[in-house]
Image (cartoon, rainbow, N blue to C red; front, side):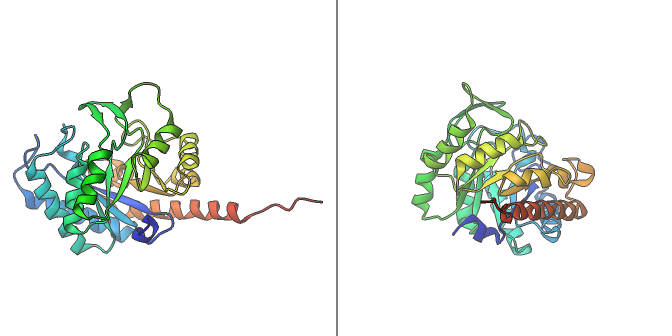
Length: 281
């Protein structure tokens, strides 16, 4: 099943639910029901605003481990994702930060979710958690072992990180797809709230060919019409929050505003594609 089929949209918008601190995190408040209530409110706001899918992240658990979260986090996220699936009709995916792709795959498989996000699938990135190595070898074999068909959306040169050596975006995209076997590519700016450049999006799109490229950060209602000219979809969080404050809950009015701006950009893109100037003979 293709990603377009999963999201039931030719240009999917995937909203992000940033979970409040979970058990064992430094800011855990001791009340899982409060975390669930906030997640339900945000998922409902995203779905009612018109997103094509939702990613659930343990965003407020920072500082994150490099590669393996506590079992309590896996348990809590499994419960929450399952609850959200009963609440909204759009597909719900998982991103276990910082790079616990194995747990994300396990959660997704057990709750019948259809996709996960992986920050570092291939290569080596220097991060505030230390050096994070790609996990494609273990993850793809684990997916096969589980008999799972969960799709993998993989960041390329992920935000809040720096590659070792001189980065080559085209090579990184090609290796993530052909050697890491990613089902979709995510391109971000250098940090949360920072968009990728149009030039980088165009390079990634050319290198990815038929594999979809998602904008992974920094998209808002003002710039999405331009950014979407060189991308297949967008993953969005910060700009959909009340007043654009990442600590605030999702604002359904901002969601609708973003969707309308994206749809206008898609219309422009499609019109440009359909137009073929006639050359005089």
